[in-house]
Amino acid sequence: MATETAPPTDQQPARKIHRVRIGMNVLVQIALILFLAAMVNYLGFSHYKRWDLSRDKKYELSDKSKRFLDSVKGKIRLTVFFSGDNPIGQDVQNLLTEYQYASKGKIDVENIDPVRSLSRAKEVFDKYKVVSDESLVIVDYEERNQTVKASDMAEVDPGNPIMNEPARVTAFKGNKRSPAR
Amino acid sequence: MNGKPTPYGVQEAFFNSIFFWFAFVLIFPLITMRLFSEEFKLGTIEPLMTAPVRDWQVVLSKFFGALVFYIILWLPTLLYFVIFQFVTKQSAANSTGAYLGSYLMLLLLGMFYLSVGCLASVLTKNQIVAAIISFCVITLHFFSGLLSFIMQEVSSTTRQLLGYFSALEQMGTLSRGSIDTRPMVLYISMTIVMLALTHQVFQSRKWRM
Image (spheres, rainbow over the protein chains, first blue to last red):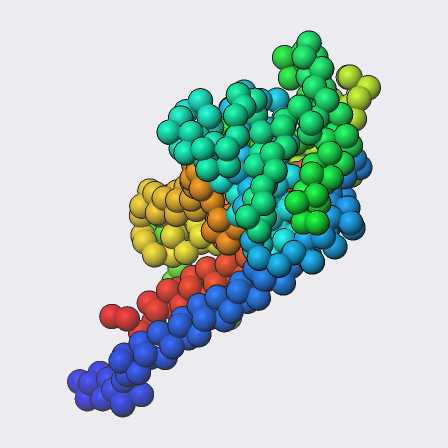
């Protein structure tokens, strides 16, 4: 009997678990790791590199336009009027994303589908005094604005929609530069 | 496709199609749901924990076991492109960088989703509950990436912030061949966080009750 009861009494002090203490310790550890992860992601979000390994470098910006984006002071506002069925709509979106990444927060983009949101389209058309029923992009920089038509961005063969990408990119860049001067 | 020439390769079309994503988000709960829950349920965790292994070793080996299995699951897809090139005598992707980008994205996203599955599995004894938890988290993350496509007016910072978490957008850029460091930082750090949480939950059964 005595031998049976002895082990628990011996072990009792050693087995005591300070739950609150361990719990606090674990909470602090979790908070620390979340904080560290948030900091790492904050740094990773603002300092990043991007390599274009594709062969055609379809959406890569030229050094010239990168230098231009560096020299820009203030905001550039782009309003994109593209109906959903435009063959180069997705290309324009991808290219604008690259511009946004390269500009480090200087470019704002608003997408308006002229077929679906008529009222907003009319509002913007009135603001910039534009009359057009074509897909276009309005560039607004320091109170000056310019429109770039979809037909200027790409050569689209209507029967067989293959895009002439280099032509589109150069046209885009040329129009981006002109309002800055 | 449909007989019309397209401006992108088959490889890009494959990794960005809805069929790919549908199957993709489904496999993670299936791979990870029984990692820990079955051990808890069958009680095999006891002999495992009497073996001379540390808790973090168990968590890491479970995770890497799942990861290796996941990588093996993806290997046959390389054959698709080989067969495509053999049959049509055309290249499936526009560059080697595009393969590199899309498989890198598969690995990164796989790591993150598998670690989410590990955490879900360690939380419960029931495999189905684990599967539901991980499926919810994974689909929430995936669909939050669609926000930038729905929102009309997107300022530069909001767009970048949404794009930072959007798996769909990252797959779009990486499968095109633009390698970006942001998804790498995001998914590797989130995997470490999830595994650390898994470790804490796994350890907590020693002091909780």
